[in-house]
Image (cartoon, rainbow, N blue to C red; front, side, top):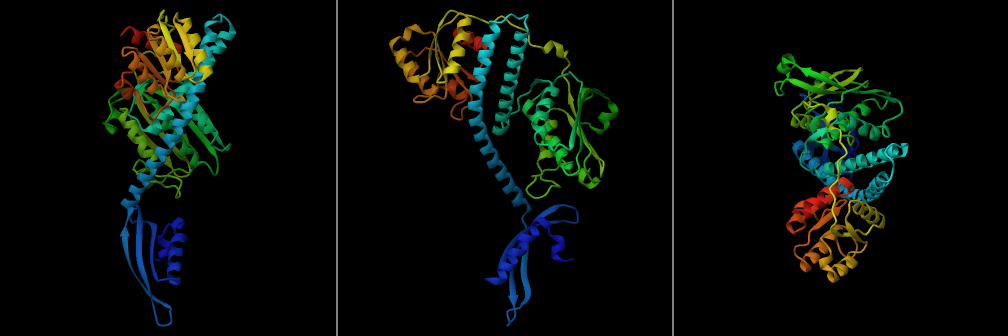
Amino acid sequence: MKWSDVVFKEDFKAARQSFIQALKTDKSYIREYRIRSKAKDILWIQERGYIVCDSKGEMEYISCVFFDVTETKKLQSQVQQSQKMESIGTLAGGIAHDFNNILSAVIGYTEIALDETDPDTSLYQNLQQVLKAGERASDLVQQILTFSRQTDQELKPIQVKVIIKEVLKLLRATLPATIEIKLDVSSEFAVLADPTQIHQVLMNICANAGHAMQEKGGTLGISLNNVELDSYFMAKHPEIKPGPYLQLTISDTGHGMLPEVLERIFDPFFTTKEKGEGTGMGLAVVHGIVKSHSGTITAYSDPGKGSTFNIYLPVIRKDPASEIRKKELLPTGTEHLLLVDDEEAIVNSEKQALESLGYRVVAKTSSIEALELFKAQKDRFDLVITDMTMPQMTGENLAKELMKIKPDIPVILCTGFSTKIDEKKAMAIGIRAFVLKPILKQKIARVIRAVLDG
């Protein structure tokens, strides 16, 4: 068997070029390429050699040694992935800060308009939809931030069908028009899960399905059903308990997988994609996420007929209708508040919202002006609410200066996103509450009362 028959075709050109270059120069070379072992494993080989020539300068033989550098390559890939995620996190943070400020204004003014609109009108219903969309956008930004920062798992009751619809909105723009999407998500039951990680599971599997159909097109099917897993199923999957589960099925009509490939799809770093198109970690991550949610995942495939993934997650034994948020009476007050935010649209909407709750509010768009006012009238204010990112003086530094003047003044710090401070750091310097934007009226109303009432 020739060397060219063993080397991956994607690596052949570069490896051959390094050899040709050695012939023209000092006759020594180092080249790296992938081969497939007898066990079908993909190995990275580093070849170090020296070309020995005869008296006429013609190549006589090659002296070389081979090193298996597969593990080194894997570590390099992990470092590169980590660096990429760090860059994504930085970018996402900047976008999130600006986007959350925009959402603060959208949500704030929508809530004000709702308070002034007759609930029996179509306008009220339309505004409710605007508010709902704003809240979903806020959740999506938080999901992006959580994923990019690789934070700990945060389990809460979620409806998977809502996340499915979000994912499809993102995917539809990237999938070719030749791929049809068929959706059947009838289940209303909730599961206890991290929404960001469920989002990641869907994105990874659906992206793989799209890749399998990118040349000839096909159908991407997503369904959601309630199932009762019995002892027969448990015999094959002893890691989970019997009972009611949510079955998420993702199928495609792509090229499918051979049995030997299907056996290894959840192995870390295993991939059948071309170089640069995949790290081999996508389905390994999916497998880990599903297991951490006390669920299981199965895969079926026939070459030329497509693939099907079934994900089983235990449902919450509770009527989902009882999870619908009911309108609550918001806590109110008459205290005097100092509100600081450099975005005029945000500070105006927040001022109106707080005044509608009965508070007396003085609003400032400059942290310096707010500090000067507080120096002159420190006993006038019962609470300060300040944004974090502002020119001249940040909310963190403003809070420190205010507490120097009046140590017992309660401060609430708000931010769209900040790498400089989090809730733990804020509490450490004496700030009473840390609130992420966009700020809903009901949320800030409860936080204010909790802080003022100790």
